[in-house]
Image (cartoon, rainbow, N blue to C red; front, side):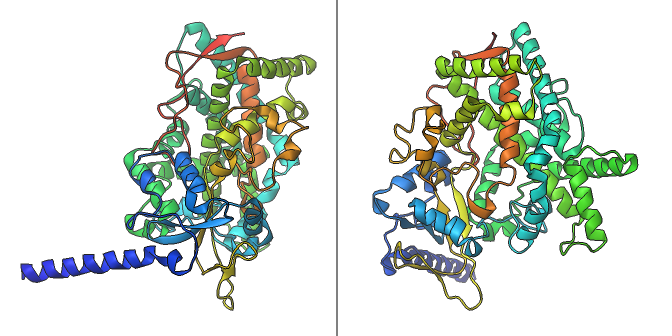
Length: 507
């Protein structure tokens, strides 16, 4: 009996091996150049075993000799064959011109086990995605964001006061943590209509929830890897992008916020007001999309999660680079002080958006440290279509469901598009130079129809935070500052390995 069982197991292993081996030869049979890969995990071996950070992994793909000077190259993520796009014109064809065939991301969250992730704008597939996107787009118009500006600025002023006290007390603080206090309060106010004041209560559940989402323990790293690279296994692994304790907390808070808003009749022009309006329209049958409580909560949750992490990282990496180049920091601080004086000590929406050098600095930060080092899509064909041809870039025809990856970090650090790419140089984005940036090579917020809907909000949040941080203070390296920067090898959303430590001094 035992012998029979062992024989069955051995046979299954042999069959699986030869299947994987055959699958790994897909591009060779199709006569398509490909990056050689591990039979079991494909081209993400280094990431799977935490040998390298995701930005370095993507750069290895981008610069692999197998794809040199080619518009695309074959690759594998675990057992799934995929295409890596390396030509900016092909990038624009996939993400913009033929968006209708690439409107879905390859990644996946499990609707039954992880409903808040699966129902939000980032993860949903067409046609639900398009309906939600259409409804949410008005939330992020310039007019709406301008109306929310005072809420962001109020938190920025609290950040400045907090830094004052921190400096006076001689405390040593990790910079990303400080920026996270700020973004937590901003997003809590805008998305949930609640004043949290993380500067006085750093152990509040909003902050702890945001931190736990991006605490890349081994289990969280496995979850992110499954969601982004092995979506078919997500239900089997019961992988949850929104951990259960975070989900329960947001359910409680969202329910409370909505009920209180409905009772009071108050109008703050924040996300809660917009979502309530959507649900009311849905209840009346004025929309084709049913805005359930689950769907509304999903949008609010991803708005918080994305806003908390991306803006705080952008701020922290900006301060790090400025600390290493004091002349650049001096120039930015002069712009900040000039605007502050011109506006008589009151920051306005128009003033922050007029700050040319601040925009240049932040854009350069996002070039060097894009939140996600790659973008992903999958081919979605009409029933009558048999494949998607990559002509005129090549003869290969992509089958239904094949993933396509765009190495954002590779483009961002390619000297062909950004000379001396490892140098932090805001002048790349000056009014005189930004027109020289090749379209399709800069994508910190994605490209095309599925670009980040909250891009303007995220940039505004980071700008206001940096304004108030540097208004009366400056930063410089200390003995704990990591030079050169090293990124966390487990973090798919890029993070500094071990944090960013700088001295904060009164100006």
